[in-house]
Length: 230
Image (tube, rainbow, N blue to C red; front, side):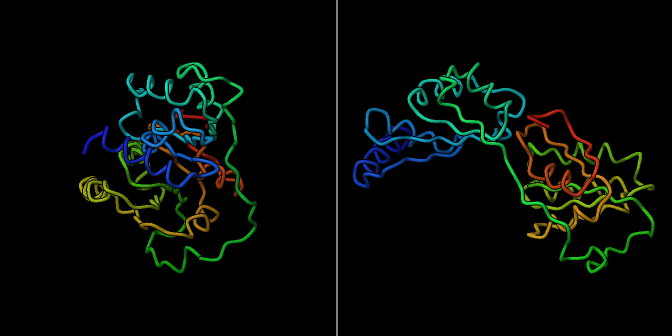
């Protein structure tokens, strides 16, 4: 029933449940953050980045709402860049903004071999790997444009799935990229990072990407857009 209906429902749920802590996540949780104002429930908001609508710049109305709603909340962020935004742009108390960097466990071996996938690639080509959700803000089209001069000199593996996949497939076919393979969503993506030569990151917005940390652990050079803490 619109914003007021959602707000009323959220306030009722919080009052009925009486939780010890309310945890909200990203912009999608802001209704509940707003509903908690004036109630006694402690609130922790987790913000780890922006979607496609705020990839280039933040919406002013969202900046003002975060500034208003999160004044008395604790905020957890994974990047120094996002902490600076929260303090400078959202005007939040730096003592309430907690920078908790992403982390990964070190790994020395993989389970799934690239050879087992039977990718039918020319032997000896360096392997560039890209891992992420196929969404607009991840900008896989920028990846394909950057790969164009290398199309006969390197293989490109794209690991992930999402709503722009069909458009990515169409661009691969249009450009005649014979050495690109889309592997879809994989839970063993890190195995493939460990067996590749370069990790590429083409996102318009990121904070502290897990894929970059995994590439660093595997000793891979990273080619990236200048985003977040990269």
